[in-house]
Image 1 (cartoon, one colour):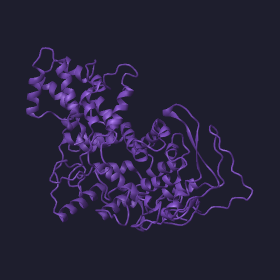
Image 2: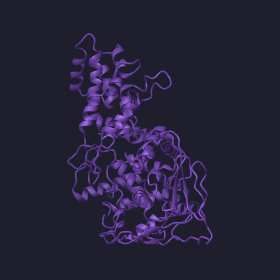
Image 3: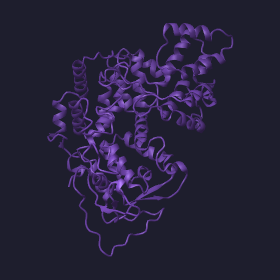
Image 4: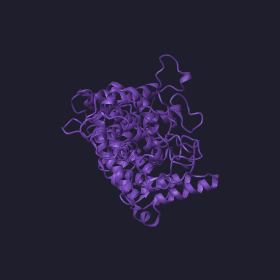
Length: 541
């Protein structure tokens, strides 16, 4: 059977291409992954006759890496400290610093929360508020728990907060099979749901075999407030999915034949027979569910996260690469099929094998990616692609709703100005509006899709105005109460909002405008708002 316990492989992992990987030897003998990446990408540029973008300046890199690793922009003091630093290794040191912070764990939890649920998940009444789940996932990243371990815990759904992933697919085992294969295995199975896949090897029985691992799951709701509802996942000892053949051949009332649980691309699950006199026990909300005679859920969790699984590590390497480099080595990231080969196959192999060698340490992988020259290119260049095909320039992406909800208060000094507990908590209506208007900024292919609602909210929102208005210690107050020259105050304004000094012409025009009235309060607040609404703030650049 194609699964092994993770604890059975403490020293030697087997690569996806058939040879043993020894972490100690590989670390000592191989080049750092960041060097391998840059070498392979540069070779592709040469082969394709592509001119790459230049290296990003410090201010561009600073804002990009803060958004990617901390989920927000740097404060004025953080930006000034980095830009003034003359240490040639300051970028590497900043990366290490950000990776060690709690903000990194929160940011990664936000990213993976959207991967696992999306903005509007199924069974939305139960899954829209996910505070408990995000807390659980944040703790995993804060402890740097390996990817295979926390995914296994997610699929087991036995830890407090982890059950919500299954709740969205309540009584929908076919939907759960589509999601698990897509997210964790990089495999699109939905076309095999109604008939044999017309272009891939997957048959309808493969799809229903995977769905068999979910058909016995029971969601038990113990109630509680909307953002803290408690769920438990029980598992029955009997029950199979029924396959009635291709959808176009179905007849009214046709139930179909039961299909045994099957590992994707592998063998049927071996499980003991259920005693003839067995009766399913009752599942009661608020009580611990009875244990099944045999747990398919446990076997699925072990198989999915096994180092020998031919899909799991490769899909993870490709997805994390796409998160930081703009597109996957295989694009889309959840379609790693024979018909959709990687653009740089040897590079995907190297990233996958080293992720295995480092025992699924995502923080290690992220450190290597953002230390590459490829990641640190500027976003300007000859390529007009939203997601450059050969990684010849950095991606340009809009900030997520979660990033906006941290970046705007950071820029305006709202968090820093809090003097009492709770004062730095964002108003609930602001959070709701931002999630509504900024929640889905792309069309799924990297193309930015602004909305009229987003534009109107940014330029007219009373909620944003309240963050900007002068309050002791915030940005407006710092600019208005400062005894420094207007040139110095404009420098603070730009560093606070855009993480860079103003250009000479910008400084000249802002100084002239802000110093034009004896009482500049309204002018200062409008200047902050103007920078918050500009496209430079909306994107990571």
